Length: 315
Image 1 (tube, rainbow, N blue to C red):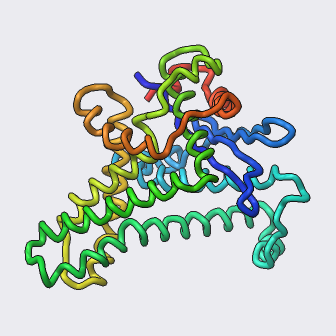
Image 2 (spheres, rainbow, N blue to C red):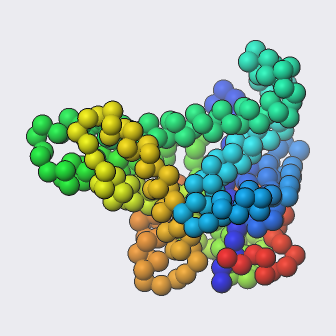
């Protein structure tokens, strides 16, 4: 039985210069955000209240994947905002007129929720546009040359994967992102150490692999593959209708992909290794070997979410 923990690394910068870096870890009962500032580590923990406890249907198979995907994006934005709040006052950016207007109308707490919601919606819209609609648009030029619907869908899938791989490759060339990838590696190493039941020390964590089956990179690649299969079930020559079908079927793609990566993370056999192999290969783009300070941040964040009862940590 593997233990349920996942994380997210982040970086806040101004003018291209990184000021705050950190790791978010989410366990079965708690969420922890740990950032490294000039003064040292700053921690924040909060109790998780899954929506499925209030609405059990949201925890059902093939529904929970979409819910958890949106929840993860919201938590990621909250982590970045917490990071920004811990910048030195003289280096914090002045609030925009829109931010001030929202705070004046709704209050600080509600304003933060609105800003996070808007950011999540924009993030999803950008991802859908780049990785879902753009390949559909480009593949549309082949309609007059390729009569086979199957071949057109395969072409669209190939374009989607190519755009995704190009995006990952481009990020590796950005100096600012390299440290984020190193924190990503530290997060994976810490989780591996915990899952193996080893004492959480910097030395033990350093020795672990930075490639993990339950990773956002692996999830996104599985989404690319599953989308080829699901989108092939509903196609149309009209571009706008194809766009609408892709968007309508996207929750189905996310739901299936989530169950696959959850299955791959829970078991270790030939099938799960096959499912995990492409994603782990891509993690060589999105993870780097961390230094000991990065490992310390990941270790601290993980320790904050480990439940007292080990049974609560099992999948």
